[in-house]
Image (cartoon, rainbow over all chains, first blue to last red; front, side, top):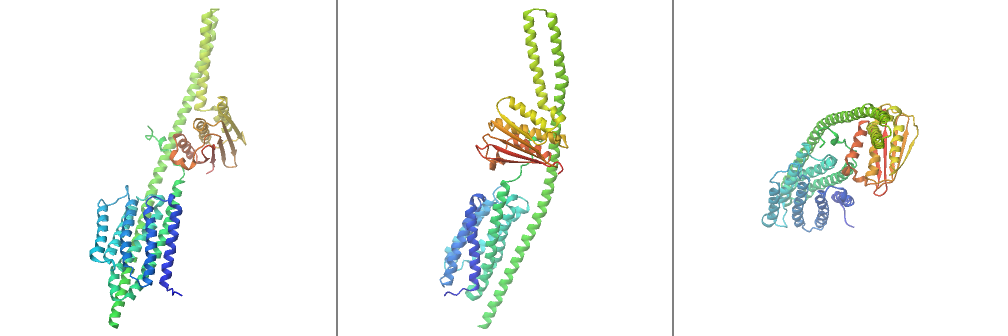
Length: 237
Length: 268
């Protein structure tokens, strides 16, 4: 019988919540705003690669190539999610697409020239996490200005909070993971638990956020009738 | 060996400490954003409430001015133009006495009389449409009865009106007038857009409320797309009802007619 340690429990809880989120998205995809397709693509990617990586790690097989692939797809999908979410009239820096493109090139170059596929891609992962933190800050900036559409505001706020807290929390773990792995693998595993706990928090907030956004979309479709602006003086042709 | 392990442990503790600091920073930032957002939202809502209040006041005075103007025109048509036309009609009878048996003159007078009758009738009709005197004198049920009779006489539609208390009056005449205009608009919509052949209206007076059920057998529409396809007529209905604190709920499907329920609670 395979031995299950408490790390597995964290992993299974996060996986279960991700599966529920994917199911919820699939069930309600027509009622959710279009920018959610990028987040919806990120969820199964996260689930699949995390799942394979977890069992490879337990079997003692190096799983670093998966992390390289995950880092690349993660920044692409979450970058597109934020770009699509913060489309006009929201404020997005004009050089966003250049930064985004350069980031993708850097991650690929890192795998090709700096940290080979079987090495831990700490540079790329740190860059990816920092970028996502910046995207989340961009969202917060827009939300403080009161620009985010009201019906989806609370759900998007939770989703953004989940991504922000997760990547802020795991930034140092990724930054030092290569160094820790070389010194003491057991310590890396211990620290990796924090990543799992934050992953549970992220997946939970994504799921609740999805539910709230969907609820917000339904509520806005059933909004009560507004005053007839055309009857007002100066509004009529 | 032990020293290396100790150093690694210290490093791990340092990393964990760093992670905790980062998490605390993240949470503090999220808290700051949430509080700022709430404050800004509150300010925006206050500004919006003020704007809505201003627009409501503006809308109220626009509709009231419109009604006042209608009342004035109706009064002028009835009292001034109407009475002058009646005098003219009497004078024509007098003129007839002086023309004797002249056939061309008699024919001309007959034409003028007929034209005058039509003009008097049209003037009265316009005057009543602008402001039905029945509404002021006898209240909404009687005015609706008169309205339905008018449409019924055109022969294009069969209207069935059911009133639980024909003598009931609403405390405010303005509420009766707005409800009357709403029913007028609903009937017009049913005939013009819904091509309805049958219309039913049920007026129920509660202890402190009024419920109006309206239904037709017209083409109907998709209520889920009501907000985006609302025309000027339906927006007018919303505005008038909003003015008197009433609400309206539509139930319809394409090909299945329309049911509208208006709720008014004069106390609230």
